Image 1 (cartoon, rainbow, N blue to C red):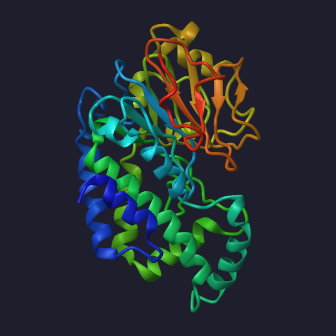
Image 2 (spheres, rainbow, N blue to C red; image 1 turned 90 degrees about the vertical axis):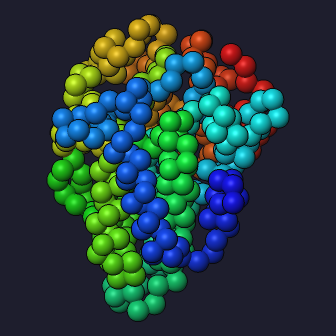
Image 3 (cartoon, rainbow, N blue to C red; image 1 turned 135 degrees about the vertical axis):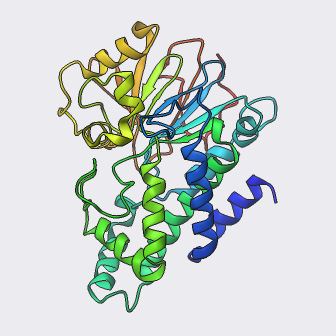
Length: 337
């Protein structure tokens, strides 16, 4: 079975994934994440692949905002036309393109507000009935199963950064905060996984989350899940997974919470040509295709109501008028460097 066929099967599935098969995939992907190409993810002080992704500087990059269980959006991107009659997935497999996800795989947002309310009632009754929560977990686990498959199969060209929702333990500390928005989503997911998938699954999946990188540099851009709370050195970024304060500062920073000029300082520190560089993030939702902050250098691209993505070329500056793309509206084939 090809990768595309496997991904399609996962996305079309209307039942919860098998525990043993999923756990095996998580374990295999952890091994990939721990021992990535040194030119792409330098090792940290623990001897494992660190928190910094050095993206290839000779091919374009597609950037996806927070996914939150949106498997159809993810598959639409991979199946979209790129160029030379190839899909995005084919271009990734042929080393012609790289894809960077800004994190947040779990927890459907506003589109599922009513479902979360129903699921909370199920949670308060110890999931004796769990239809609403099943629907949520089919989406979230399915989306992340596709992410795991892509990372396992095309690791050099596919990267998923840790967001604040990559916290299946719902822990407070170690760079994480407990999560709640409409109900008690973080605790509900944790209890559901414990009840139906078991402690080993919960623990192993949490290790996968803790092996994810937190920051990426491209030829002319930087990216993390959230706006950087302050300027971080290359050493801090490489060792970010081991530094709770850095994890928190790259995944939880709210609007207007970052230190003054943190984005510009990061651009100056980590790009060869900072004048033409921008910093991409998700985390806080926007009402249009994008929102500019930090002197128009920080580009927020997470609109839960839209299928926004970015196609950025290594040989020219980002153009906000042409490079933010909905894959459902013609794909990426019309964009040129």
